[in-house]
Image 1 (cartoon, one colour):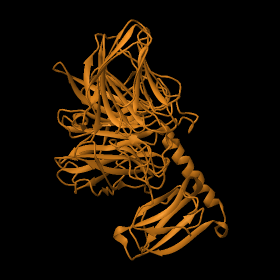
Image 2 (tube, one colour):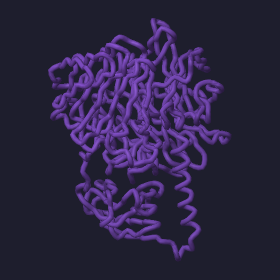
Image 3 (cartoon, helix red, strand yellow):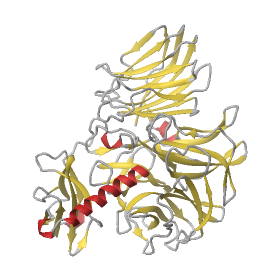
Image 4 (cartoon, one colour):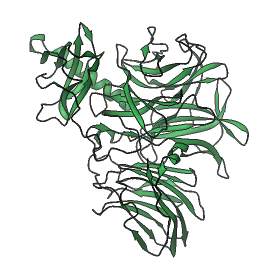
Length: 581
C-alpha cells in the first residue's frame, strides 16, 4: 500500500540516517550478552516509546535477519513486552544490541506477560497472537488446512517491520498461530503476496510444495519467492531472488498468482493499473498485458489484485478485485471490482457502472481469495481502515481479519454484480440459537435480554418488513447508553450506520463517526445476517446482495437491541441470536 510503503520506508531511512550521522563514539548503542534461560526473551515497549533498533546475534549470526525497529520503554513504563521465542536456543549466549536505547530491562520468562483475552479481542475472527497485522497474504488450501499468511509486525503493535505471519485452520474459524514465514532481508521488508500449491513441481522445489510469492520492499519493490515442503511450517527463500523487477515502477507490489490454463499468471499492482505476467516455473516471468487506464476509481494507487474465474448461468466470467487507499465512498480504504473476460493474456471489462465496491463499509480492505480451492471462491479481508488502524484501542495486538465469505455473481435486473455471503464454515460455527422472536414496532421496541451471556460475540438473523415510507432500523445497545445505529431510508434507498455514540470514538481524529452509507435495493422485506464480535459488525443483506463491514469499540458489550420505525410500523420477525463456537 502506498501508505504502508512510504511510512515504513521513511521511518526506516530517517532513523538509519540519524544513527549513521552520529559519530561512533557518541552513538547511543547498548550491548548486553545474556544466557537464554527461559523460552521468551522479553523487550519492554510502548506505542509512545522511544524509537530504537534491535539486533540479536548468536555465534556471529543475526537471529532477526535485519535490525528491527521497536518503540523501547523501561520496565516501569512498558505497555507491553515484545516476546521473542528462544525455545530452541536454551542455554546459549545471545548478544542484545539496541541502537537508540539501553538493553538493561531485557529479560527472559517462560510466559508472556499479557492478557490474551483483552477487551476487544475477537472470539471467532483471526487476530495475531501478539503485534500488528494488516493485509491477508499467502492464502491457500492444502492437505485439509486453510493457510493464512498476513502482514505482521511481531515487534510492536503499530505498522513497521513487515514480515509474513503464519496461521492455519481446519474450519476457517479457529486459527493456530505458527512461526513466521519470511522476515525482512537485504532486499527489504516483506509486503503482500500470495501462495500456490505447485502440484506439478514446475519450480523444482518438490511436488506439492507451497510456494509463497511476495514483494520485497526496499528502495525499490521487487517480487521474490520462498517455498515449504513441510505443510507450510517452515519456508526457504529462493537464492535467486528477486524473480521479477522493473525499475520504472515505484509502486510494484502485491503479486496474486494462480494456474490459468497452461501457465502461472500473476496479477501485480503497478501504480494505477494491474499488470499481468506469465510464467512456466514461478521464477521467469514475461509481461502479458496491462489493465485499468481510464476505468474504475483512481483515487489512489491500485493494490492487492485478485483475478477470479467465475460462472454465471453456465457462462464463464472473470472478476478482478483491486483495492485502493484512500478513495472509499465513505472514506479511507476500500476494494473495487471489475467483471469481464480474460483470454489468458488480457482482461477486458464489461461496460458496467464502475466503480463497483465489494463492501460499502469502512473496515474491509485488501481482501483476496484462497487458492487451490475447487468450486468455491473463499474471500477474506483485513478488518480495519488505514485512516485509524494504528490507533485503535487495543493493547497487545492490532487489527483482525473479516469472516471468510463466499463470492458469487448475481444479476440485479440491470447488470451482473459480485455478491458475498458468509462461508459455509461460518454457518457451521453457529450454535445454541435462542428462540426466534417476532416484534411489531410502532415507534420503538426494546429487547433487553436477547444477547445475555454472549459477551459481545454472537451472530444474529432477522427479517425486517416496513409498512409506510418512514425510516426504520435498529440499534445495538449497552447499559452505558452507547449504541450503533443501523437506519434504513426507503426514500433514499440507503442504509446508514451511525457510530458516533458507539463507545470509544476519540482514539483517532480520523475515525469515521459521520454516517456510513450503503445503497440498498428496494424490496418488500430484508433478510439480515449480522455478526458482532467484540469490536466488529459484519452485516449481510438478502443473501449477500449488500455487505457492510464496520468496527466499533463499545466500553461494554452490546447486549440489547432497540428497533425503531418512523413510518406506520415495522415487523421484525424471526429475530434469533447464535453463539459462535
